[in-house]
Length: 253
Image 1: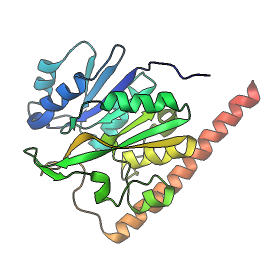
Image 2: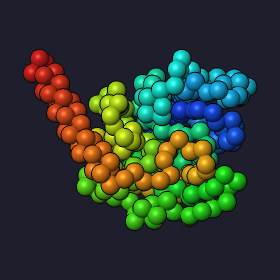
Image 3: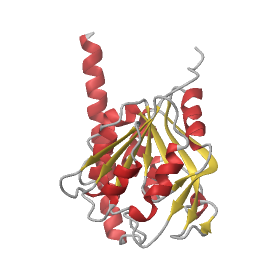
Image 4: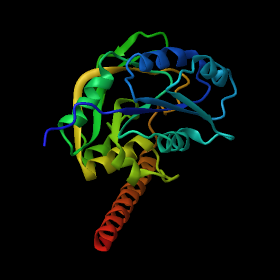
């Protein structure tokens, strides 16, 4: 069968005290949205003017929700992802900039391969004022690799550079509270149930600045070992639960 020629997309964004860069990011996303697409934003109880700015920027295909208390990045993304409806779902940070062609290139990857579960692209790394720090994020990680052990050693599943098939969310949500990185969690699950496509072009300007919610300094080696061991066990358990549910559903048919 030939793949469908069109697919709608959802963009899940988490915000927290993001006034400084938020408008530029939303405009870069909105400019690429097509009919049927949606932008779902969950604000993590911001204390600055983020919510007011979101109200000013709102348009018909943009939905804004607000956490009653601060849940952190993983909890907020969990809620945003759970509120999306379309088959292709992008993860989106508040302080980056989508480059032209991102939405089209990602969606076309899913359309070409029905077993594609995750699409990841490269990104240009910039600072707070937009100066280039690195032309290729993946080169700073030694190149892209989506294998299990490469990911556990050095994660390349950077959420803002990722889009997922909804099947990954059906298995990956809710995100366990002990998972150190929600994007690594979803990337690892996605690679277990389908194909990972890597786009070597930089489709994002990935901003590094003093107020990033993701840590700029690596954790200690003992902490990283504990995180990886916990992540591996949780991934194996969730996969077993997913396969058991599928087997149970097939036996009832």
